[in-house]
Length: 452
Image (cartoon, rainbow, N blue to C red; front, side):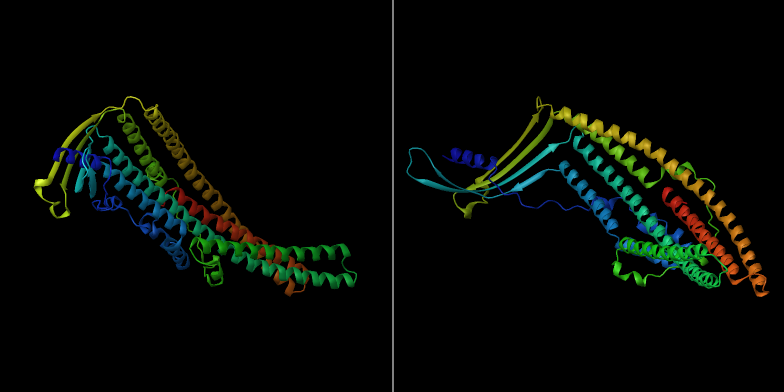
């Protein structure tokens, strides 16, 4: 009778009528085991400090703390760390404990007998061929890849913050100049209107002056609209409400220097240490481990099963060792046919590995291209800036000379205003040229992985 009772309890036990509690062993997060530099470290915040712009520094720090994309990438890193923990758990045994009450009635008997069991089950897949260990190492490599991918993303966000900021600084100056230009064209139009009434200038010239005045007003509206959009974009980048853009402070472009300290060349070491390059390197290593693990799916699995159950007819005697039933068993399972699932899994992992190889090589070429483009663009824009500085100085001398002639009565007010308009035009060119050099500097910062 006891043998039959024990067999019945084991049948209930192994068919799954037990509760597996959430009592997994807590481990230190794998993401904490690998050194993760702070954002200020890998974005090279000291480089930004050298720009001597406290407003820009404030916006960068605000983006680091509040940008939603940066927060999302941080969660992706955390998710990858949890995945490492989940993958590594397969290397450990699974232990379950439950309670199995039962009511038995044997054939040719009118009585029912109640039993109570406390089953404890331990199951462990021996990783003799290293399949699960390869999967764990792959998860760790993928974690590192995501960490570097996060670094690349955050460097891009910081670069975008700075580029947006400098474009706003440029627009501030352009709006200031454009207001002067609108005022001058209004004066020119009024002078032309008086001259037309006196028959000195033609109606066609008057119409052209009025047209120029209207176009200057439209340009001012466009500049202000573009600046408003840029301020809204900056607000989103730093995680702030666009309703606060009126409070945003920035430097004057007149205070920005023209000593950019850009290197003539960039070493190949910087290229291979770019975060996006390193990210693909770790992803490639992870994919290689996935291929190796997929091959090991064709090998047998070795399992060890341990069971301990306390069986009694009452709860009071459930933990009595006289009522204990124990089992230790092992099994070897060799997969024979699974509908070609393992073959497909191996091919998929090989395909993924080959794709990453191509992407890895492409990233190397793109990195070289981007750095070369940044260096060339800077050199070209710096040359244009130097030429524009010379042209602006010449235009200033011309205006001073015209102003002297006006005071002497040699030229008219209209002639002086036209000379001033030419000076304002050159100032606008100078502003754009100077900003281009700063944007080229930021581009080189981004393409070098913040290592310039």
